[in-house]
Amino acid sequence: MRDDRGFNINAVWFLIGINLMLFIATTLNDDLFWRLGLQPAYFTEEPWTIVTNLFIHDGFFHIFGNMFTLYFFGTYLCALVGDGRFLITYFLGGLLGNALCILYALHAPWANPNIDPYVTYIGASGAVFAIGGALAVLRPNTKVIVFPIPAPLPLWIAVLGGFLLISLFPNVAWQAHLGGLVLGLIAGLVFRGRQRPFVRY
Image: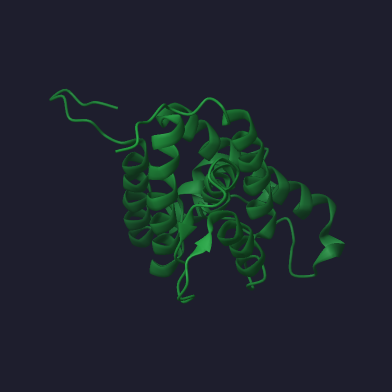
């Protein structure tokens, strides 16, 4: 992406910028927070929320965790497959995760008494897990540090382990994580063999 002065805007920083701007906006305007969040019961009346909720976060640690992971995983995936395929993976992962949230809330409320069609879903975690899933296929043995574990882990273990651990936390939409992860794994298989060439030095 390039502005009128010729300044290159990386796709990852573009997404981070939108998230940060909307985080500030929704912190100052509570009505905007609820207007952009996804409520399954009102999805047919507010269909845009299946996308806008990917940019809404609740609190510093929520947005920091997602943006920190997006920066490192997203930058890596962009280098491998390019900005276009990165953005496709990101948004399709977020959309599939949201679709699972809607289906679960509307058709399987018996599975969890705390889930109902009027719960508001927010956050980029499903989209971020899509990026992690793609990398887990493309670069499974790349070593990464996961705080507070002192030793580096293979990337595929970090991604799958992170999915299992984070999804156990209360008030976390594991459906969004699952949808994003599955989409990312599929994308990784599709992108395999289509990565950008590189030279070792």
